Amino acid sequence: MNEKTAAASLSSDAAEVRAQKLKLLREQIGDVYPAHFHRTMTNAELVAKYESLEPDTETQDIVTVAGRVFSSRNSGMFMDIHDASGKIQIFSHKDTTPEEARALLPMIDIGDIIGVTGIVRRTKRGELTINAQAITMLTKSLLPMPEKWHGLSDIELRYRKRHLDIMTNEESKLRFQQRSRIVSGIRRFMENDGFMEVETPMLHSVYGGATAEPFKTHHNTLKLDMFLRIAPELYLKRTLVSGLTDKVFEINRNFRNEGVSTRHNPEFTMMECYWAYADYEDVMDLVERMFAELAISIHGTTEFTYGDKEISFKGPFRRVPMPDAVKEATGIDFLAMKTDEEARAATEAAGFEVEKDWTWGECLAFVFEEKVEPTLIQPAHVTHFPKDISPFAKEVPGEPRLVERFETYCNTWELGNAFSELNDPEEQRARMVEQLEQAHARGEQAKQLDDEFLDAIDQGMPPAGGLGIGVDRLIMLLTNAPSIRDVILFPARRHKAD
Image (cartoon, rainbow, N blue to C red; front, side, top):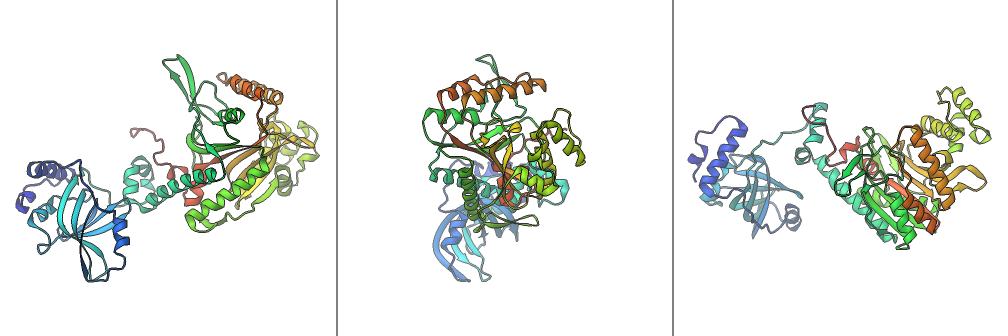
């Protein structure tokens, strides 16, 4: 192939030009998508190895690299190619590059993936460069790359075409690399703390472990309607009953058929764990140690910025009972109230609308959400939740309306939820029956009692502390992401026609 042949009568349409170049390449070199090509190092490894190479210096070292072409100058004499680790400059000149390799240059477009073998040098300007001796076409790209993302009009396209977002947006690329490090960091922290990782079913015949609307599916062979899990809790507790381990965890995908917002996605990642012979205060310590370690792994310190806020994951976090936090924010002393009627009246007097059947605990939780949550910027553990809304937690000694539960908040978001787990089988059954009746009253007729879980609890579950961490929200915080969709690699989207 020669340059005259390569440049002959190409269309003005960018995609058509690429298609025509592909045809010419097939005719001239045959396989444009070869199965075998072996590089000797990544771009980052190359940069690290030759970090001390002086400007205007050439080695005798021959290396082979590969990557996507991101820029081309002087008719391809200078090209920048990127692999996942970084970029390197390629130099192709008649004095150093054979004619056969240079003849390929007119056929190379931005976005093509090429392999290059050549000698390493550093230019007078200090740019680490490979003097190309051979160029191999590895993948011809049939679509032009976007130049850049700009403005709000492109946000939906970034989510829909994530491959282009990461390809052209270093911030997005870094964020998903950090996500991987955070998830790995959670797993490493838990294992180092003595927890065993297990895998529990994602398809449930009876859904439970949280209050949420499930996704429904059907098992053809079993002829059984099933549900994508909304939480792994009940299976993990059955594992604890088994005696397989005293410290169990799972990093899992959960599915809740509910709303979408900047902090909610129907498919999301949680880390859930159970720790025998521990309680919710032990779990608070675990959360603080984990969060500090993750912050240090990403930022090198426990201090970091989210938006315009300076956040510190340095422990200990503030710990405050929910009734105390509400009293401090509003002056309402729920602990002084004896009846549901008093609680509803106090909530209405504070300017809120209430439902006629709200309980004391529901009123307390509602006022907390309205008046306290928006103030929780620095990390804090809010403890002593109402039993009305906490069916799996043990009562606080001396105050049967409250339970040993905490939620960890930061930047006004709930990041984690934990209990001293209820293990009294009779009390557990009573609470789950009550929860089932409430669900049926709301019209959730598919909701059933999980008899297999209750049978396991009858066998005897040790006292334990349990925890669920919203991994996506934690990643949002640590990577300064404005939306949960910015940290989910391929978030669910409407069809393009919609």
